[in-house]
Amino acid sequence: MTSSPTPSPEPAPSAASDDILDALVERARAGELQAFNALVARFQDGVYSLTLRMLGSSQAAEDCTQDAFIKAWQRIDTFRGGSFRSWVFTIAANQARDELRKRVRRPTRSLDEARDDPDRPDLDPPGDEPSPEDEAERGEMRIALEQALMTLPDDWREVVVMSDIHGMDYREIAEATGLALGTVKSRLSRARGRLRDVILESRELSEAVERLGVRR
Image 1 (cartoon, rainbow, N blue to C red):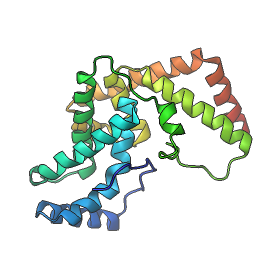
Image 2: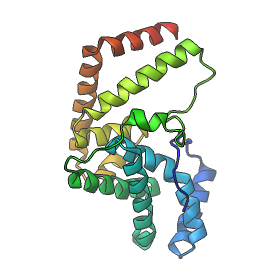
Image 3: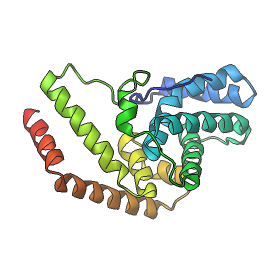
Image 4: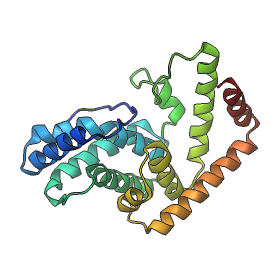
């Protein structure tokens, strides 16, 4: 398995990519480690991004990501079809929840520290050649938004990360979290409302959002 994945946008699925994915899953279920490693390469960025935003620590997220894929390999024969991404996200989310439950008050690295780590490229992919001013503004806004995200309760943060960062629909989130569909919708609505309140209460963040909106 590879290590230290870097978050990146998840590509839009296509019929061809779905066929390739299905073939990789079937080969992995038959015990082919090379096929499973190809699945790891395909999904490790998303899993790392999910666990990082749930845990707020790059080291904890790396450990959690590795443990999640180890468990996925050990349990690959239990996968019965459907969305492989949702299945592996379920394992990763459970790992992250276990870590959150085990924490007492031990220190963790913040998202800001992870972003400044020379071995950890920026958590967000670059845009289409923004101006230096826009890039600095967006960098400040990303930090503020990540900090706002970390103020949410763990269970709220989990659903908003799955939905608004990874583009999972209500059904996928319900499958990954084991929650009822109505509970997913309720938590997501409350989480988004809390984030809006945090943004409105932060003059710096509100002004940054407004400036970037005007420039677009």
